[in-house]
Image 1: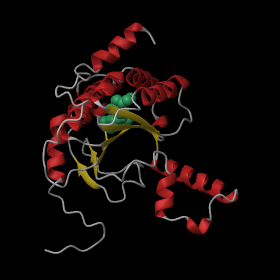
Image 2: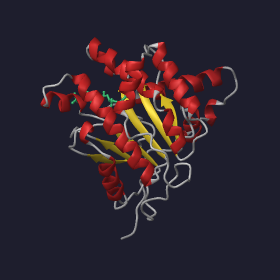
Image 3: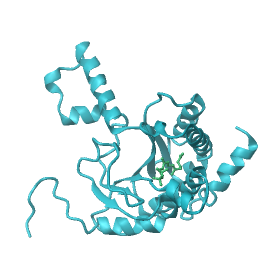
Length: 268
Ligand code: FPP
């Protein structure tokens, strides 16, 4: 990668690699002490294109601004003590976008995953969730290296859902189970929800507690369908590039007021 692209990525992420101030390896005390903290927050980062269009800028400028928002949200999530943060960066359907936009997103992704190393010092572990199909090998390498560089970090896991599709994930898991059954390693009658969950990519990732979508759209768009089964949804009008760590904190506070029943009946 060229020096220019590395410094551009660093500029986009400015402020994102501050060292921890509390000497706790990045693990800050939780900002609130209630029992309704979401363990797993997932975000559909929508609205980059509209943000750019409103300013007469190309869509790629919207994605660059989206990346700056991402640093603010990572900071906010660390401060809130969120354990798992999943980010919808590219869907299996996004390949239908104009070639120039896809190319720009691939370049931005490569630079981003390459330059996120400083987060390891703040306790952030990066994981990738998605399919290798159609991805340039440089992007796959950058994702794998980001996972490798941060594999010992424990404060927060950030999952880049890059070339991810919820149905694709379920279909691949089903194929994996079928292969095990065909070879006699798994009894088909033993397959239940918990066995299925254990065969998903990143099986250690818990179900989503809160799912945020920015930009006013109210749909799930094939995002982490299995794990979103009992997620609390938060649809906000803010376009993703304007979304900040403070917005995240407000939504986490709103989550604490939600009554979750998981299909059961509660008193009162
Ligand atoms: C949806 O907005 C956003 C995306 C498809 C890309 C999200 C990308 C980022 C937030 C940049 C950082 C991510 C990486 C790591 C590459 P949209 O383009 O659909 O917006 P619109 O609905 O207003 O057109």
